[in-house]
Image 1 (cartoon, one colour):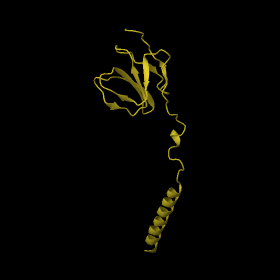
Image 2 (image 1 turned 45 degrees about the horizontal axis):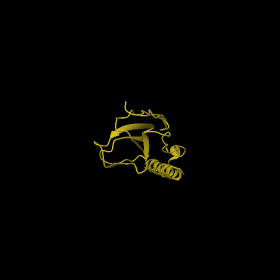
Image 3 (image 1 turned 180 degrees about the vertical axis):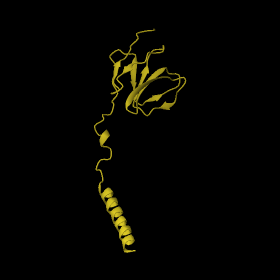
Image 4 (image 1 turned 90 degrees about the vertical axis):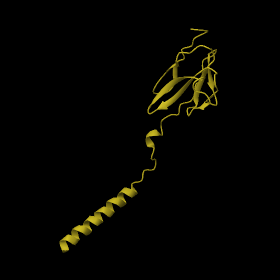
Length: 127
């Protein structure tokens, strides 16, 4: 009986010690992996561009084509949106551009790691 009590008390003591140790191992910054990740800032389109940066990231109905740049998991993505289909929408991304011509634009090329537009694919006039 003494041996059984000794085993039970020893197990309880080990459990209490390991729980106390785990609780005391508090990490100061729970999000250390993201502290050096830069936030993507919107770029100004090139001079005389047909793309216009939308400051309030809101699309009105039937006002043309837009692109939205957003981060999905670890990669940046770009989407082309027709405002006659998706309008009255506010996007979570602060990076929204409007195409100023009536034709459908080509999607600019972005660096998927940084979200930076590397080729605006400007089309002057109609395609």
